[in-house]
Image (cartoon, rainbow, N blue to C red; front, side, top):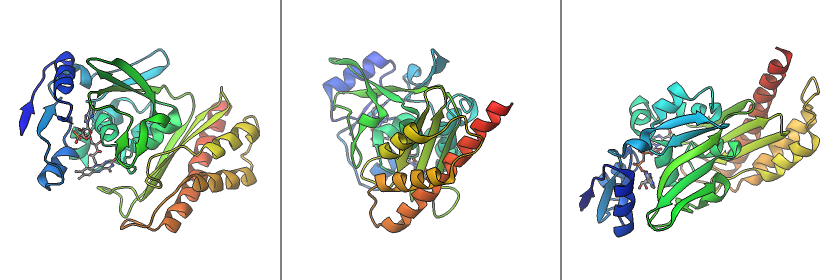
Length: 287
Ligand SMILES: Cc1cc2nc3c(=O)[nH]c(=O)nc-3n(C[C@H](O)[C@H](O)[C@H](O)COP(=O)(O)OP(=O)(O)OC[C@H]3O[C@@H](n4cnc5c(N)ncnc54)[C@H](O)[C@@H]3O)c2cc1C
């Protein structure tokens, strides 16, 4: 197996263009597990850990740009105020060791339906910045990035450079059901993001369909019927929101849970997270 070690982004893109079958390696918390368990035996590994710019993040122009090599630990410690939904999700990933190595970029590269970054990225309307030597830079909205189970819109010669998440214009929440509190793959998960100025409620569903996805009908319902100035949230509207979020999913029975359980859990998580976010919204208005 070849081990490619570029030290610059240009070298990394050149290596990927010359050897598209080379598997990128960031934190290695997915890749090395697959290699160690002989799930995968790629002809080459493309180690990106020496590419300094992938570890950079910045906030400005109404968004937070997170390099593909920024570990979850940094998202939790530094970015909670700007992208709270993603930071909450990052907090639930694996253990301290995994959060220290694992990255949002790697989560996107793996494109597992159970990846915890995906629901908050969908809910917030994030875009993924990808690049190839010959094709240049493309930005892909999160909603168009996930194509199938562990399949994404990334082309063979492309690498993920960064993810750009709008700085939260309102409250955001992430919720995850697992069989225990830590080191667990989600049975299912849900994220909500409020944008009071645009009168928009964003959603993201994880681990309950072949790909992470939005609950578009639920979002449309809120766009039509949520009274942002009302003192309280209409319980009937919350019920309908929960039902539509569950209806957007297409879960299966597997070792982690049944489809029926996932639908029920999504309904509950959607109602809960919406209520938490709404309460924060009301609190901010009152302050
Ligand atoms: C014990 C344990 C617990 C875990 N718990 C969770 C959890 O709770 N939630 C969760 O979501 N995940 C969990 N994971 C999975 C893993 O930690 C995450 O998916 C993590 O985000 C992967 O990031 P990484 O940097 O380690 O990726 P890597 O393993 O380096 O790469 C993952 C994939 O992305 C590709 N890739 C990496 N960087 C790029 C790039 N720049 N461009 C293109 N492709 C790229 C790789 O080729 C590979 O296919 C866990 C893993 C372990 C071992």
